[in-house]
Every structure is written in C-alpha cells, then in structure tokens.
Length: 119
Image 1 (cartoon, rainbow, N blue to C red):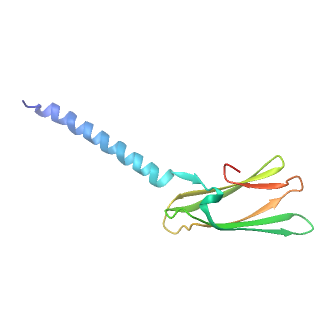
Image 2: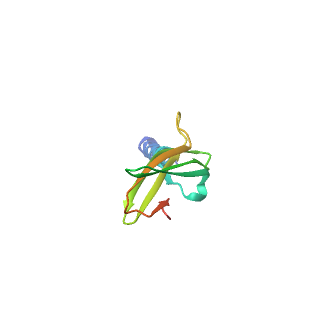
Image 3: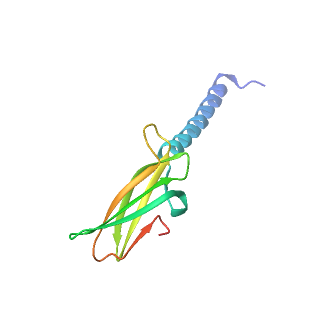
C-alpha cells in the first residue's frame, strides 16, 4: 500500500508541524521562563539597614541557589505597611550573573519588607 505523492507531502507537513511545536516549547522554556526567588533559594542573603536624616535605605543582596538561573531584575513594590521585594531569575544567559544587590528606600509608613511571592 502506497501513500502516493500527496500522502507523503501530508506526512512531511505533519512532521514539520510537530518539530516546530517542540522547538517552540523549548525556546519558551530556555528564553522566557522566569521564576521568582524565595528566601530558601538564596545563598548568603544579606540585609543591611542604612538610616540617614532623609530616609531609611535597606541594602539587600544574595546569590541565586539555582545553578542554571541568573538574575533578570529586582522589583520592590509598596503594598500598605509593607514592601514586597521580588527577584526574578531566568535560565543562564551569556554575561549574566546569579548575584543580586538592591537598595530599597523605605518610606516612614512601611514597617516590614517581604521577600518573594510568599512574603
């Protein structure tokens, strides 16, 4: 039993579509996959408070414990009486590092800083 030329073309198109879907999923995982670090994922965490007459600044630093991840960005948002500090990490990229350092300016209305999603 032979598929013929049309049948073989359909098989090739189907196989090509499967390969494209697999490559697309791999590209997503390798390039756009982002995690938010939690306290248990940070090695050598360090928090130092610097007070001056104008404002309190807290310096937060650490190293990502996940070997294959590097730091993409650090975001601090004020939510009521607390600041949520989110450290975003992505899969290893050339020239990027797994260490983060961030200065958080603490308004007088804030009484705690939370780290990660769980806070």
